[in-house]
Every structure is written in structure tokens, then in C-alpha cells.
Image 1 (cartoon, helix red, strand yellow):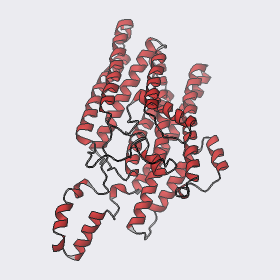
Image 2 (tube, one colour):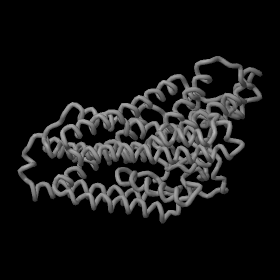
Image 3 (cartoon, helix red, strand yellow):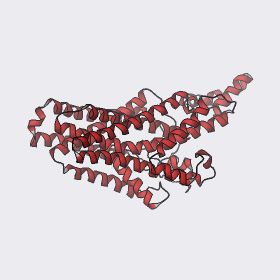
Length: 427
């Protein structure tokens, strides 16, 4: 189902009674009248739209998760190499390199586009295209974005200034735009590297019925990286779009996170069981990826500046859709979401039935019994959290939908940062 995006820069609790306050404005003292004007014209930056010190510190936490996740995978690959498991070594490194390659390509393309736009060039670090190319060739694109965001954020949140409310609002919005770019690259990386890595390591661990410390660390940090990427992407994206309201922290964010993590976890575990039954199950996963890619292609996404990059983008969307649902285009996706999770539930149930039919002896082991319990529990809880989120906690639309979802109608201003962000896939 498509996100419902009201066009408001004030809190819901405020907009509900502003008309009544306006009727009584003539009876208010001047100081109260000025306060009312600030509330109605949105000139004061709302706290949830500020790039705070906590947000700056959380950015550092995200960077730590990203680095540790990659390094644990690299160390695990070296361990496999020492044990002469060359296939596992190659697959582990392949996922790491695939995540790095895709994120560097998109990061450089976005930097290049922004450098050609006079309005957005000031948001790009001062460096030549050759310098940017060299950084991205050596895999430093995301680190460059982290450095730029942390440097700009430090100036705003840790130093005092006397800027006007409008200037502060523009600066904070720019920071969230930078954070949204970074969060989408992290989302790409998590589904191209961390999720497949989880699938591979679970297959190895369940096949050997033992788990080393390094394997545990690799899976734990891959899981944390995915969880962080999902929440960070959702919050940064919604805060960077002026037409949207941010879902409050606490219960709504927790329910959304549990919905995503439970459905992804159950699907990864089910796919692992299918791979244990027969490694040719990879063909089924490839078909799922192709279906997601074809669906993105049929929607005629128009996210990238070149045709070849657009095909890569659709292929990445196909990977994401293999494991969880995202709104690829700005439209109501209720029917598509129902069909999607019916297919996922069918795969989860099929994995358990096939295991019971062809390898019943495995169902008696404590480890696999735990896995089966996790599949059933996460499948049910994931769907329950999904229904709760979209029925009670998802922001409701108060005005006609505007063109702020992926590839929605609008002018062809592809090089504008706000346009790029408005075309990001919607959680």
C-alpha cells in the first residue's frame, strides 16, 4: 500500500485546532498573536525536522555498523580460505564486493549529477570529477558521504549561530537530504551484501550443525546492519520530503521495524531450508529476483539519468523485492502487497512441508526445530505487525497525493536533489 503523504510542515496536534485559534486571534495579546502566526505559517523549525545532536551521533553509529559488518565478512572469508573452503570464500567475498560496487556506482552518478546542477553544487564536497572517480574506484564513496554529512552536521548542531528560522529550516532540510542519499545507498548495500550474506552463512551453519565465533559475529552484524538500514532509510527519507510528516518515534517505529525484520527473517530462514534440501533452489531465488526486476521494468521507472544505470537500478530493486516489499512507484499498492506476502507465506509453508516430506530426520534436531519455530513465529508476527502498522500507525493522507513518490508524475528535473529523493522507493 502506498504511503499516504499529507502536505504539512506542522505537527498533527497543532493543525487540528489552528482554525479555532485563528478565530480567537483578535482577542489575544500581541505576544500570543505572534506565537499563533509562527504556528500557522510554519516559520519555526519543528523539533522533528531538526538535525539534532542525537541524529549526528546516530550517524556515527551507522558508520560503525557498516564498517564492522564488512570487516567481519572479510575476516570470515579469510577463515574459510585457511580451511580450504574456496567456494565459501569466493561467495562471501563476492557479496561484499557486489555491495561495494553497486553503492559506488550510484554514489558517483549522484555526485556527478549534483555537480552539473548550479543549485545543488554547493552541497557537494569541493573536489574535481577525477578526484571523485578515484575515491569511488577505491570504494570510498560512502565514506566520503559520511565525512561530508558529519562535517556539515557538526557545524550545525555543535556550534552556535544566529541564523533566522527560515535559514535554520533550510540548513536542517539540506542535512536530511544528504542523509537520505546516504541512507538509500546503505539500503542498497544491506540487501545486496548483508541479506545474501545472512542466507549464505545460515546455509553453511545449518549444513554443518555448528557455528564458529566468527560466523556468529558475521551474522549478528549483518542482521544489525539490515535493521539499521531499514529504520534509518525510512526516517531520513520522510524527513527530507517537505510534503510528508514524520512517523513519531517509539511504538510506530518499533512496529514498522518488527514488521520488516520478522518478514525478512522468516523468508531468509525458509530459503535456507530450501537450499539445504537442494542447492538447485537457487534457481527459484533467481526467478523471484527476475519477477521483481520485471515488475520494476513494467512500471517504467525513471530514476536514473542513463538507460544502463536505470537497468542496474531495476535489478537492485529486484533484489530488494526478493526479501521484502517496497513501493516501487507512486501508486496504491494494496493489491500488490497482498499478492506479494501471499507468495512469501506460500514459500515459507512450502519449505516446512518439503523438509517434513524429504528429510524428516532433520526435523528432530534441536537446532532445526528452533529454526522451524522461528519461521512460523516470525511469519505470523510479521503479518500481524504489518496489519497493525498500516491500519493504525501509518500517516494518513489529508490532501490529494502529490508527486513525491517513486517516479510519480512531475516535471523532468532529474538532476535536482529533491527530485531524486522524491523518486526513492517508498517504505
